[in-house]
Image 1: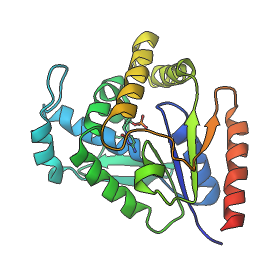
Image 2 (image 1 turned 135 degrees about the vertical axis):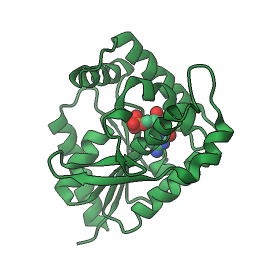
Image 3 (image 1 turned 45 degrees about the vertical axis):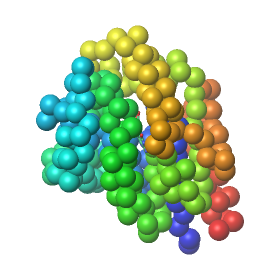
Length: 230
Ligand code: DC
């Protein structure tokens, strides 16, 4: 059977990674969380004192980019691939509100994007991939067989992210999570290089009022239709 490339884009906390993981498992495809890659570079910048509340040493980060090696390793127990930075598992460390607070600034740096996009294209070149992010259908795989653009109301998304962080044991306030979601929406959509936009041929899925099962069934129908047409 033909294998296809599925690109899932959208604002933060629209449930992209949840449905991408479900699809990859169902289809036996590779799942790539490109947000985790931008978070990994951000974590590196934080650990190395290159970004903080007041300054961001963009030149130093660009200079250090060759020292940043990002990889994924499948975790059988979790059922998805965890992200590694220079051989160290940083999956949990990149999901904090602190990393979320800096990541959009790092993701706006063209040199960072160029390096990560190249790696993403390499990871998806053999098809059979579900990749989620902000520029997958527009820049990374403009010829993807199926492009989805996920949306949900800002409050729904902030509540989802807040619940996730609380469940992990992070002490966060809902207002701070909401502020972060709004700020990232703005920065991700307004940056010069590869801003978050809906690809012309992407299918929009508003999941504000869909259960996970309803969303999965709807998207699986689209996948099956795409597979039939291939
Ligand atoms: O999907 P996420 O929330 O983990 O992504 C974190 C940030 O990384 C997001 O706010 C913008 C950036 N990003 C990007 O610019 N391009 C991508 N393909 C994926 C994420």
